[in-house]
Image 1 (cartoon, helix red, strand yellow):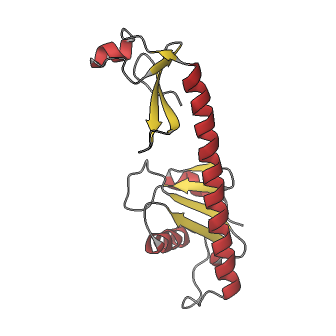
Image 2: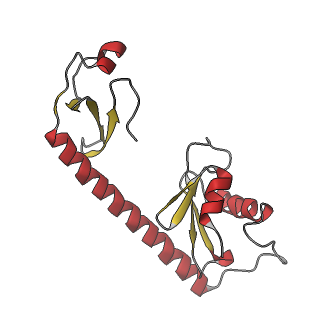
Length: 170
């Protein structure tokens, strides 16, 4: 059985739900653009999705996992994926998309509630004053600035929260 926590630790990632998020090879160590999920119906028992890459990147990740002992070495040439495996992979990818969309919707709903309860930001807030920014387009709750993260249609999807000293709230 593959240990997602060990993979996350080895590659500077984190476990999130039932998957491990790690940096995609060749990208910033902070990007965590590759998801690794245990999928019994998939070849090697893993589903690897590179959000900032493609199938070649996913295969590179599997090779990397083999080299580091997380997957057994190949015992010959790659075999073709069966139609049942292809369906299982497709279903797992759809489930991942649905889970991600549901998480984004939940984050948006929480963000809208926080935003709606915030007040017009104080122009004298230490972060705004230090940066020389006005309070336009931002709100505040307590000492925390709320910066909206919106899409092209101005729908609020999330908030960046900034303390007075400029550090983001995690």
